[in-house]
Image (cartoon, rainbow, N blue to C red; front, side, top):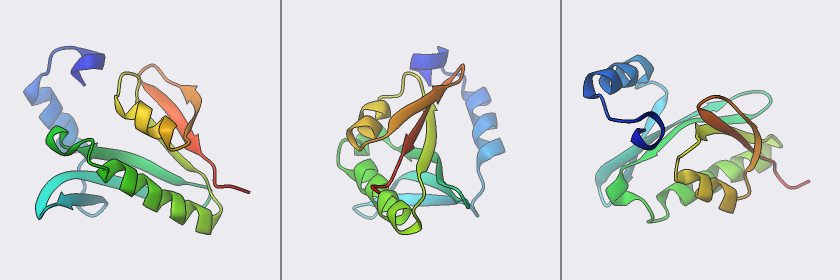
Length: 120
């Protein structure tokens, strides 16, 4: 967030988080028995939309995000639908998404829009 928007404002970030947090749709990620992140996926008729994927920095680069994305890729293959997501322009996860075959399909003022298509 700071790389893209500047200095962290705790109150503002808390407000955004509370507005978007829905325990009915968010899944907690655990590793070694500890909560280390969360993700939100929408299974829609025409795609699988990864709305959120957050892994705590101390758990990054351990394969957690890769595992989750590969799991979604398997589900997309079974359903014959693409996976779509948007990520901040300066998000380090862009490298992960590209490595796993996601392609840029557009941009907004704040996000890179990406898509992964299952093999034909």
